Length: 474
Image 1 (spheres, one colour):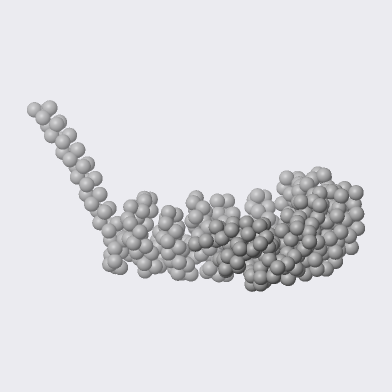
Image 2: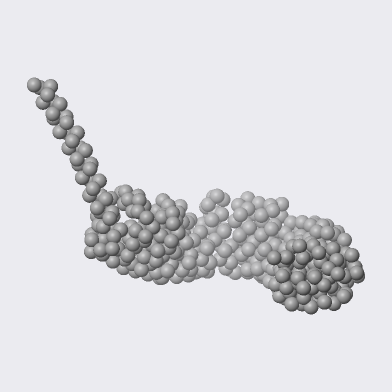
């Protein structure tokens, strides 16, 4: 009897468990149906219930795209922290259409729920953090206090920094308050780094004391001061640039800051750094000269005669960021440097400055004995674009076949050149290389001209035309 009673009780227990599971499954399915349905009243109630479950994202994911998109309508109707919680989670959806829709939803309801929105800054999923940053930026300055609050939480700090950096100087006072009132050194150093990104000179005085820290922490302050580029810190930055004991990456940022300050002393320090044994620092010095602009030209002209070819190459890089006629002249001289790396850097830099004065220099360089210079000169002419078209068209008829060929290659990469090329293809002197450029451009407008050239007496021209027709034929 006892045995049968035990069996009965066991069966009842199993049945109860199974029945409860079945009932829960039915109830869950009904909840999901309502949450993804079109009855707004039922939907908001169901979504509120789902928001209290840890598995709500997976449950919504089990539904097809249209149903998942409908959830956004319900979330907007909720317009409360539970709705924000759901919207944030849905930024993880694998379908970009769903993510975009819920980002719109987050922005729509975020104004009334900024504290809940800011929670997304510390989410473990990168898509959620990035979406939260985008939403908070879209919601404007009211987001700032919430971003500052989340900045104090380690998991949210990187994403909060993106929000604060976007609002720039408007974030400065809050970050300075963190430096002044918090004891957590890591938090304060991150605030220093954020202030460096913002570049507000009001932060200079608060950052300077951090230079007394050990080198591995001092580097944060140096980088920030380099980014801010306050002229009052010129002496400190020069000393750091010349210090072999300071972090190289921080010194590189310092070089950029000195370029922005661009006083005579700052430029002399950059000149010395062009020959630094640390390549990151030396290369940053070249970019620093770009930031200095025309004020750097006298020192760069002097450094262009430096015996170290690495320095001369960096001079070319520096000149490439200064769109002045004198820069083009100096680079033209460096095209004949005895060191190939210098010559080629000069050819690249002439394209970077984009000045009309660079065009004749580069066209002449198309017949340079250094093939690397020739190729880069063609690329630079293509980069300059429309101002180079007429001189390049003239070069198509040059007696120097190398120059004519590379002129055609450059023209093939300039969209504005096609009308001039079609015209040049009808002139005996420039016909061959104009057709070559049009073929390289895959220009179907050239087909009638190629058909004519296919019957020309010149066998080389006929072969070129036949190749072009094969390539361009529909």
